[in-house]
Length: 366
Image 1 (tube, rainbow, N blue to C red):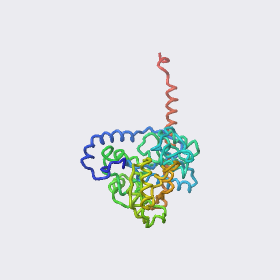
Image 2 (cartoon, rainbow, N blue to C red):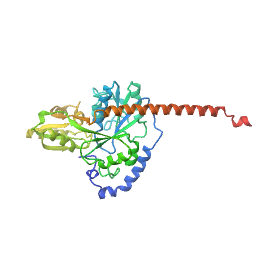
Image 3 (cartoon, one colour):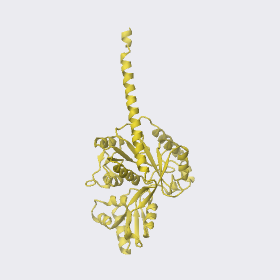
Image 4 (cartoon, rainbow, N blue to C red):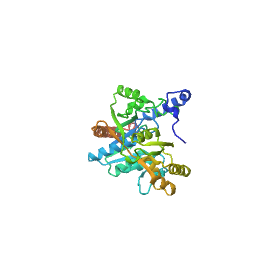
């Protein structure tokens, strides 16, 4: 499997996208109705969701980490909530990097737990309650923007400027997860990552909808040992080409590029091929932090590949350094409004219940 997302999703809509349009339309009807659900379960902690409009990565995890670091500088105790995509554990679980592998909890939660307590839960309400009971005072939800079960106080939608929203069609004809108009209504703001033009249309629509847009860029941490060296690069992420561009920006001479499916766990023969090919040709091995964490904790040649691979770490940098603080502050403002509204609704429900109790029953009238 080279990629979970068909390449035509990221090209101008062609006969394949239009041929699947009836199914995309039906998917959009269901997804839009789900997003419009008004009765969402609430937790007594602010919830900041980092999501995207499409299937596949746009930089959500680096964004969540950047917001977490900002929250800690503000004296807060943040925690992450993740679905744990790619893992096998199906009950709400606090991630323990000493005991859990990526095969158990997913690769992204293992990266997140390096920064703050991380809970995986397919039922996000249960996961959020665990974090609340732990004393977390800001829940950062990695993905889950289209989920209609948990009350969200601020939804920051990340858009990659190179890929944008692909061909603009919804699943299965394209990568879009729900009708764009509905998603924009539910979004609090956009985070535009990069300096390409693939997302210009979405940015203009967001501006017309009155949604602010923050700018950011991904920055690789220095890796001088790769500069000028011949490299075998491998990546199992949503957009491997983005990783290869990053390596080239670091000065690496990429001789071999190996693409795997997003979140894919490498098989023994694939691991052996990477190691043997690199050794036979004198190439350095280079990969992403997500790919590396999927190798962690294993033995044999998987351990050897993890040891020999040079990991390129990425951090997300906001163009406006004040932006993360503004986003977190607004999350708390929205949270207080939500709690006041909930208290008022409870008060009215109690008053209505009391009034109903005072009314004479039909039997007493007789």
